[in-house]
Length: 209
Image 1 (cartoon, rainbow, N blue to C red):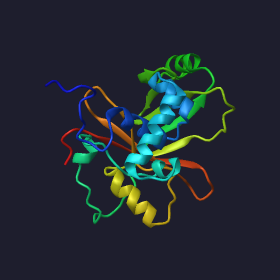
Image 2 (image 1 turned 90 degrees about the vertical axis):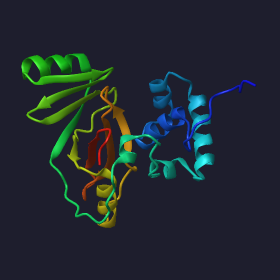
Image 3 (image 1 turned 180 degrees about the horizontal axis):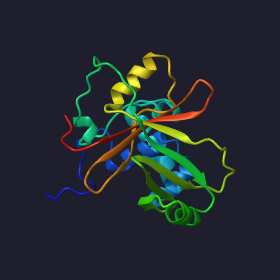
Image 4 (image 1 turned 45 degrees about the vertical axis):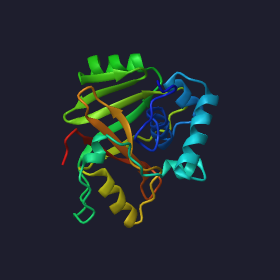
Protein backbone atom coordinates (compact mmCIF):
# COMPACT_ATOMS: atom_id res chain seq x y z
CA UNK A 1 0.00 0.00 0.00
CA UNK A 2 1.35 3.41 -0.97
CA UNK A 3 2.05 5.70 1.97
CA UNK A 4 0.43 9.10 1.66
CA UNK A 5 1.63 12.43 2.93
CA UNK A 6 5.16 13.71 3.32
CA UNK A 7 8.01 11.20 3.58
CA UNK A 8 9.28 10.59 7.13
CA UNK A 9 12.43 12.41 8.29
CA UNK A 10 15.25 10.81 10.26
CA UNK A 11 15.91 14.07 12.11
CA UNK A 12 14.26 15.85 15.01
CA UNK A 13 13.01 18.57 12.62
CA UNK A 14 11.98 18.66 8.97
CA UNK A 15 14.19 20.48 6.43
CA UNK A 16 11.71 23.37 6.36
CA UNK A 17 11.70 23.62 10.14
CA UNK A 18 15.50 23.65 10.19
CA UNK A 19 15.47 26.63 7.82
CA UNK A 20 13.16 28.47 10.21
CA UNK A 21 15.39 27.56 13.18
CA UNK A 22 18.49 28.99 11.48
CA UNK A 23 16.63 32.22 10.63
CA UNK A 24 15.36 32.55 14.20
CA UNK A 25 18.84 31.93 15.60
CA UNK A 26 20.16 34.60 13.23
CA UNK A 27 17.74 37.08 14.82
CA UNK A 28 15.24 37.49 11.98
CA UNK A 29 11.62 38.42 12.73
CA UNK A 30 8.70 36.34 11.48
CA UNK A 31 7.92 38.80 8.62
CA UNK A 32 11.59 38.76 7.57
CA UNK A 33 11.65 34.96 7.64
CA UNK A 34 8.42 34.82 5.62
CA UNK A 35 9.97 37.10 2.99
CA UNK A 36 13.10 34.93 2.77
CA UNK A 37 11.07 31.72 2.46
CA UNK A 38 8.36 33.08 0.18
CA UNK A 39 5.55 32.18 2.56
CA UNK A 40 3.15 33.93 4.95
CA UNK A 41 3.91 35.27 8.41
CA UNK A 42 1.19 32.99 9.81
CA UNK A 43 2.94 29.99 8.26
CA UNK A 44 6.19 30.99 9.95
CA UNK A 45 4.39 31.43 13.29
CA UNK A 46 2.93 27.94 12.86
CA UNK A 47 6.40 26.51 12.15
CA UNK A 48 7.93 28.24 15.18
CA UNK A 49 5.15 26.95 17.46
CA UNK A 50 5.62 23.39 16.18
CA UNK A 51 9.39 23.62 16.58
CA UNK A 52 9.11 24.78 20.19
CA UNK A 53 6.80 21.85 20.97
CA UNK A 54 9.06 19.31 19.25
CA UNK A 55 12.16 20.55 21.07
CA UNK A 56 10.45 21.10 24.41
CA UNK A 57 11.54 24.74 24.52
CA UNK A 58 9.43 27.37 26.33
CA UNK A 59 10.11 30.40 24.13
CA UNK A 60 11.63 31.85 20.99
CA UNK A 61 14.53 33.21 23.05
CA UNK A 62 15.37 29.69 24.20
CA UNK A 63 15.32 28.62 20.55
CA UNK A 64 17.85 31.34 19.65
CA UNK A 65 20.29 29.75 22.13
CA UNK A 66 19.50 26.12 21.25
CA UNK A 67 22.70 24.44 20.02
CA UNK A 68 21.16 21.65 17.94
CA UNK A 69 22.63 20.81 14.52
CA UNK A 70 20.72 19.23 11.69
CA UNK A 71 21.61 15.66 10.81
CA UNK A 72 23.88 15.51 7.77
CA UNK A 73 25.35 18.99 8.26
CA UNK A 74 29.10 19.22 7.72
CA UNK A 75 29.51 20.68 11.23
CA UNK A 76 27.81 17.61 12.71
CA UNK A 77 30.63 15.51 11.22
CA UNK A 78 33.38 17.79 12.57
CA UNK A 79 35.14 16.58 15.70
CA UNK A 80 34.38 18.76 18.72
CA UNK A 81 37.22 18.40 21.21
CA UNK A 82 36.28 20.61 24.15
CA UNK A 83 39.66 19.87 25.77
CA UNK A 84 41.70 21.62 23.10
CA UNK A 85 43.12 25.05 23.86
CA UNK A 86 40.97 27.92 22.60
CA UNK A 87 42.49 30.54 20.30
CA UNK A 88 40.64 33.34 18.51
CA UNK A 89 41.44 33.44 14.81
CA UNK A 90 42.04 36.41 12.50
CA UNK A 91 39.29 38.74 11.31
CA UNK A 92 37.57 37.03 8.41
CA UNK A 93 34.76 39.46 7.65
CA UNK A 94 33.61 43.01 8.31
CA UNK A 95 30.00 44.04 7.65
CA UNK A 96 28.57 47.44 6.77
CA UNK A 97 25.01 48.58 6.10
CA UNK A 98 24.24 50.64 2.98
CA UNK A 99 21.14 52.41 1.68
CA UNK A 100 21.54 51.43 -2.01
CA UNK A 101 23.21 48.08 -2.65
CA UNK A 102 23.53 48.63 -6.42
CA UNK A 103 25.27 51.97 -5.95
CA UNK A 104 27.47 50.51 -3.21
CA UNK A 105 28.50 47.58 -5.43
CA UNK A 106 29.55 50.03 -8.14
CA UNK A 107 31.45 52.25 -5.72
CA UNK A 108 33.29 49.52 -3.82
CA UNK A 109 33.95 47.51 -6.98
CA UNK A 110 34.73 50.14 -9.60
CA UNK A 111 35.88 53.13 -7.57
CA UNK A 112 37.83 51.30 -4.85
CA UNK A 113 38.68 48.41 -7.15
CA UNK A 114 37.77 45.66 -4.65
CA UNK A 115 37.25 42.18 -6.04
CA UNK A 116 33.55 41.27 -6.13
CA UNK A 117 33.01 37.76 -4.73
CA UNK A 118 29.26 37.20 -5.00
CA UNK A 119 25.87 38.79 -4.37
CA UNK A 120 22.53 37.52 -3.08
CA UNK A 121 19.62 39.92 -3.51
CA UNK A 122 20.39 42.93 -1.30
CA UNK A 123 23.67 41.43 -0.02
CA UNK A 124 27.08 41.82 -1.64
CA UNK A 125 30.53 40.48 -0.72
CA UNK A 126 33.97 41.80 -1.69
CA UNK A 127 37.52 40.64 -0.99
CA UNK A 128 39.81 43.04 0.91
CA UNK A 129 43.15 41.26 0.80
CA UNK A 130 41.77 38.09 2.37
CA UNK A 131 39.21 39.79 4.64
CA UNK A 132 35.65 39.65 3.33
CA UNK A 133 33.61 42.86 3.21
CA UNK A 134 29.88 42.16 3.63
CA UNK A 135 27.47 44.89 2.49
CA UNK A 136 23.75 44.68 3.27
CA UNK A 137 21.02 47.06 2.19
CA UNK A 138 18.72 48.52 4.84
CA UNK A 139 16.00 51.15 4.92
CA UNK A 140 16.64 51.77 8.61
CA UNK A 141 19.05 54.45 9.87
CA UNK A 142 22.51 52.89 10.12
CA UNK A 143 23.93 52.73 13.66
CA UNK A 144 27.46 53.36 12.41
CA UNK A 145 28.81 50.14 13.94
CA UNK A 146 30.49 47.57 11.74
CA UNK A 147 30.53 43.97 12.91
CA UNK A 148 33.91 42.25 13.20
CA UNK A 149 33.76 38.52 12.43
CA UNK A 150 36.58 36.39 13.83
CA UNK A 151 37.49 33.16 12.08
CA UNK A 152 37.69 30.05 14.26
CA UNK A 153 38.36 26.44 13.32
CA UNK A 154 35.76 24.91 15.64
CA UNK A 155 32.84 27.23 16.31
CA UNK A 156 31.21 24.92 18.86
CA UNK A 157 34.39 24.72 20.95
CA UNK A 158 35.02 28.48 20.61
CA UNK A 159 31.43 29.26 21.62
CA UNK A 160 31.70 27.04 24.71
CA UNK A 161 35.12 28.42 25.68
CA UNK A 162 33.99 32.04 25.46
CA UNK A 163 30.80 31.33 27.39
CA UNK A 164 32.93 29.76 30.12
CA UNK A 165 34.98 32.98 30.15
CA UNK A 166 31.84 35.01 30.80
CA UNK A 167 30.91 36.11 27.28
CA UNK A 168 27.15 36.36 26.72
CA UNK A 169 26.13 35.26 23.24
CA UNK A 170 23.06 36.59 21.44
CA UNK A 171 22.49 33.23 19.78
CA UNK A 172 23.88 29.74 19.37
CA UNK A 173 26.17 28.81 16.46
CA UNK A 174 23.92 28.54 13.41
CA UNK A 175 24.14 27.87 9.69
CA UNK A 176 23.88 31.07 7.61
CA UNK A 177 24.76 29.80 4.14
CA UNK A 178 25.70 26.67 2.22
CA UNK A 179 27.84 27.25 -0.89
CA UNK A 180 27.41 25.32 -4.12
CA UNK A 181 30.40 23.11 -3.27
CA UNK A 182 28.75 22.15 0.03
CA UNK A 183 30.90 24.39 2.25
CA UNK A 184 28.86 25.63 5.20
CA UNK A 185 29.18 29.03 6.86
CA UNK A 186 28.38 29.08 10.58
CA UNK A 187 28.19 32.13 12.84
CA UNK A 188 27.45 33.13 16.43
CA UNK A 189 27.06 36.72 17.62
CA UNK A 190 28.04 38.45 20.86
CA UNK A 191 28.94 41.93 22.15
CA UNK A 192 32.17 43.30 23.55
CA UNK A 193 32.45 44.89 27.00
CA UNK A 194 30.98 48.16 25.67
CA UNK A 195 28.12 46.57 23.78
CA UNK A 196 29.64 46.66 20.27
CA UNK A 197 28.76 43.75 17.98
CA UNK A 198 31.21 40.91 17.30
CA UNK A 199 30.83 37.46 15.81
CA UNK A 200 32.52 34.11 15.39
CA UNK A 201 32.55 32.63 11.89
CA UNK A 202 33.61 29.22 10.66
CA UNK A 203 33.66 27.60 7.23
CA UNK A 204 33.08 23.87 7.44
CA UNK A 205 33.59 21.58 4.49
CA UNK A 206 32.12 18.14 4.02
CA UNK A 207 34.45 15.52 5.37
CA UNK A 208 35.99 17.88 7.98
CA UNK A 209 37.64 15.87 10.72
